[in-house]
Image 1: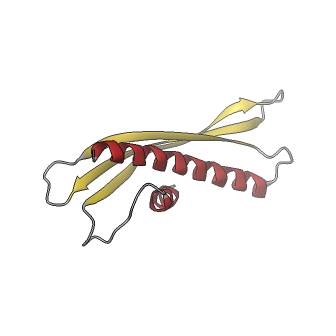
Image 2 (image 1 turned 90 degrees about the horizontal axis):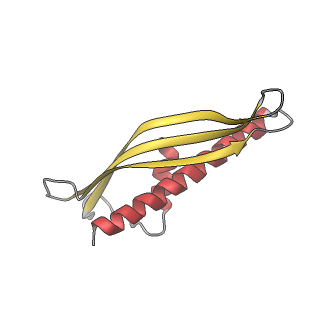
Amino acid sequence: MTAALRRAVMQHPRLDLASDVLASHHLQGTVKRFQVFAVSFDESDNVVQYRIESATHIRLVQRDAEAPALEQEISAWAEYLVSPSGSVRENVAARTAAIHRLAEQFADKCAALIEVALL
């Protein structure tokens, strides 16, 4: 999960990355909650859909500033369907894709908050 969040932030088109020496701000984050739970069942009470939720606390700190420019918790979620055939490979692929969608949602929210904080 952490790797997916980091990659989504690094690849986000509205966020520019710089080395520690050149960066005017540093983004810090901690995943506070990560949950996976069933949201839909078939007539035999087998799970057919899962939901993944995360809550990540972020801090945007300006170089040489005492207080953060931004400090907030961001929630994100995604859902995925269980393979009707019961294929473990398909279920892992669906879960991985959901984590990537969740990470992209997080990065979009993070970028929007950073843009507002830096206005």
